[in-house]
Image (tube, rainbow, N blue to C red; front, side, top):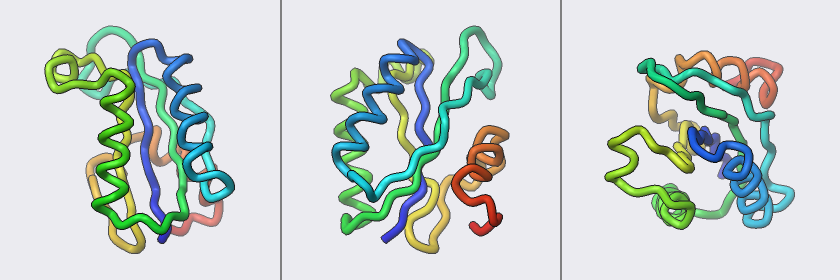
Length: 126
């Protein structure tokens, strides 16, 4: 099954971006394609910046397994509910599409998603 994921971090960005790329690359091998990481401003305003990327994965995992694996990885990178509430996001991985089903419709409208999607899918398919 194919999945499209959005990746973001707003703290220790370079190290976290490298960690996510290395870990997901080791996990999915040749079945993952990444975009570049793009520096973005927080949607809700505020100080600092995020770096975001997209990746397309081919996996035998179910949607539930994939979500659980990403949640475990986020936690291992230091993500917790308290810090997330304060806007401290070491790693955030969201599943935007799994098979033909799209999720997080609001995220699809974000500028960085539209920009980076063109890198993965230059033919414009969704």
